[in-house]
Image 1 (tube, rainbow, N blue to C red):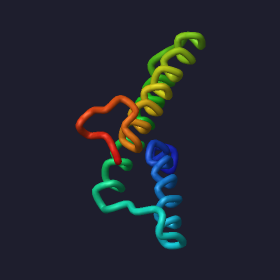
Image 2: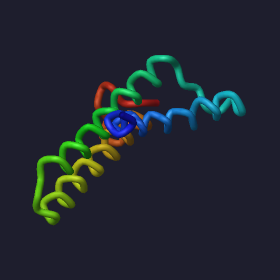
Image 3: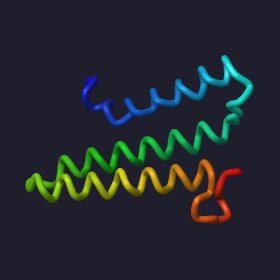
Image 4: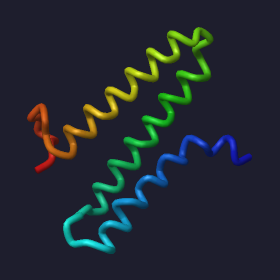
Length: 91
């Protein structure tokens, strides 16, 4: 039973900004930020899970997971600081 919920385990990472907001005034996340990051982390987890389920070849699996991780960091950096300059970039 617990195994089918493993795609939601990365959502525990949202505890870090939540605790950071309680400790410091430097971190200012709104409800919308938590929702977007929750969706983003869940999609990341689903992508990794699908890569492990569908691919049999270990080299292809590593390649796909690497691409997913690269895309995760690029979108995360764009949302956080706007490295590309899209309209949904952060401050």
